[in-house]
Length: 292
Picture (cartoon, rainbow, N blue to C red):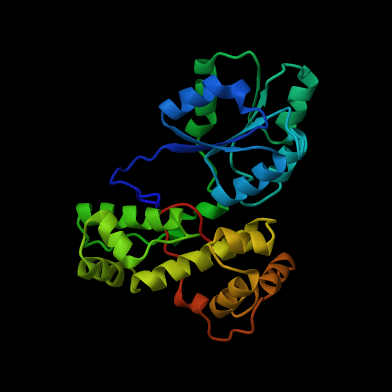
């Protein structure tokens, strides 16, 4: 069985929703309806887990149970709205006990939630209310600056472009334990020579160098825009220890992760312009996050 999240050749991927609730059984029918439709749903069991997972996965929409534990729903709403990485993600409150007053509803909306849905609710109605913020024109997220996404070269055929996009998405979905060049060849049924040519022609990098840079670009983005601890970022990116991550990031940026974050927070230069991997140019992403 393939352990990697392989992205198939299809232009439209399911919309990613994060449900943060310590009692998902109350939302079972809604979950089943979403999973059967155009959505991919992940679940966080409490507010603390949800806060971390929202920053790591950057879903298109977040559903928060009002009866949340760990971090209460209102505090979590404020926290997610206060982060650069998650501020533009639509957030909907689900009041499973229907004990919220109209004033409480307004409080959540003022905190940044886009909707407040009481229980009992009709599943079809909730699906439509979920679609409303997804259909609205979005502000450009800091994590989605399209000008920094390198597309395949103009001479690339449509079929090859789809292949490149699928390989990129597969790598990005598995940065914590990235597939090897051979595993990518097996997944996409292409030769070693073809995948080497694709990466050299379109990115000027070997497969391993591309993966290494993607991990560092993601690390930079998380350090810039989230409050995640450095050891959490290291684990998410598959490093065996924070020390190994620190060494790799210093090779990339010229400074250790902690010093980099401090400099960003103080809006000061973080390096003395010594040669480092970051000078190679802007990130190369198929979609999603990239550093500002």
